[in-house]
Picture 1 (cartoon, rainbow, N blue to C red):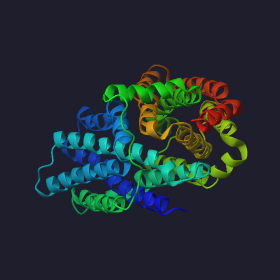
Picture 2 (tube, one colour):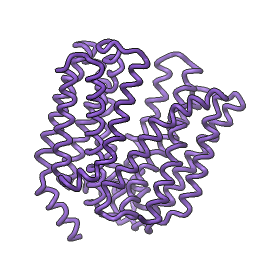
Picture 3 (tube, rainbow, N blue to C red):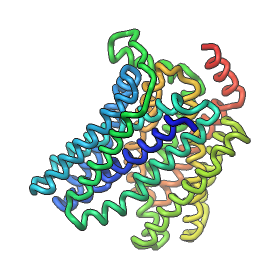
Picture 4 (cartoon, helix red, strand yellow):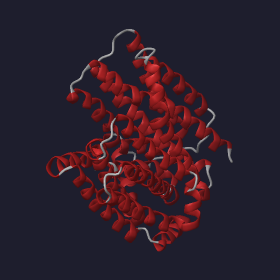
Length: 402
């Protein structure tokens, strides 16, 4: 185990604490300022915007500047945003416009940080250990940002609205200190000297590499389906399962448990089955679990088991997806390819949530899972045709010949 890999994990832990605290507390503080759903939604909408409007340009930065330096910028921006929120909390200067701006800034730093981390992994980990490394980082990020930090943020708010932000400042400073000892290769000089052409190079490679394009299309369809169902799951739990807030929380915990449990075996699954069959079978699992939401009676225990199984399946796909981009992309293009994938693949997420709302309003909540099943079948067909063992062998030969 290299020192670079150990340090990168420590950076991700501390950075995820800072990021998770800010992402958790901003909507909470907004709710103390206004109860208007339209105004509250601004924090979430603007907070997600950088993934669509900034990802492509972030990829250029990641490929054209030393990656440890970019990571330093990301955590510095994150720390400044946390400091601004902390000071505003102490001085009673909190306002909705401030929260909207901070949400955009925090997510912009997240775009830079996540993309840079993904590009750094192949520098500190051998190709054969990519699945295990990506599993570890995804577990850290999911565990810290979504399941450990939010309850802690709720506890810290009791001491003052700005208290979580002060802790986030400290976590960001720790991340900055750790990044100083993280070495990365020098960036490759630009061959075009124009940002838009640099972006075009990344998009051209992603779209022109059949295997990576198949992954991106499958992820885009899956993101649409997942966004539609997750946006309506609260209604599914309340109206069909008859659950209250505690029961809904248990369902979310079941999903988290599936993610964590699967993380311990993902690397072994990929080693045994290979990338092609791991990804194909993961897509089969996604189709089956979504379809069973429609076919099974509304038994809470059964749906909880499905949440567990679905999450366990998704992490297998995610690990193989990320590792494939890292394996088959030239280092000089990796930042742009990683962020281009996210911009294209996650672009359908808002549309999925919107479609879920319209389908539920017109045909009932269960119909959302019918629609999602059909869309996920499209992802399965894409994966089955484009992610064959032969396709991976050809991609390996091309990568080896560079």
